[in-house]
Image 1 (spheres, rainbow, N blue to C red):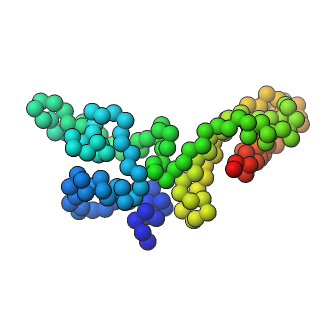
Image 2 (image 1 turned 180 degrees about the horizontal axis):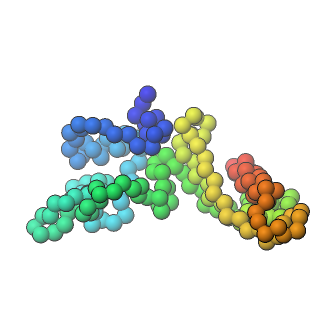
Image 3 (image 1 turned 120 degrees about the vertical axis):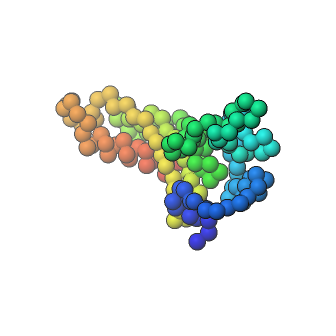
Length: 170
């Protein structure tokens, strides 16, 4: 299985005992796709801004890169426009399309308010996927009096509105 497919499947792949120069490391990244450059230049490698430096080393009394990032594992870039990197394409909310999709619903049953669609890889391939996030507001139930809790009919309507929106995307 190709390395890129392993990354798609497992999200993280460890390649042990690699001895790459900074230039080779950047070139290796480019073979996998577009290399994201961290947005804060103070953490860039001095010769290759594409490399984020995590280090406990000081040079001339100045911290090199981000200190102590190795104490815990985390996933950066979740706040970026393309959180999954080169293979993810984010589509911003499309109010015109959403209004068209919700047109068939009674006004008080139009629960979906905003959307965010992200396509990762090729959705027609086994590794590809599409994710959709939606924000809903249910002012009142479309068919029963207020029970004080979220009911399954509203859940199904919310889900249907998201799926209809996704299917209507060009």
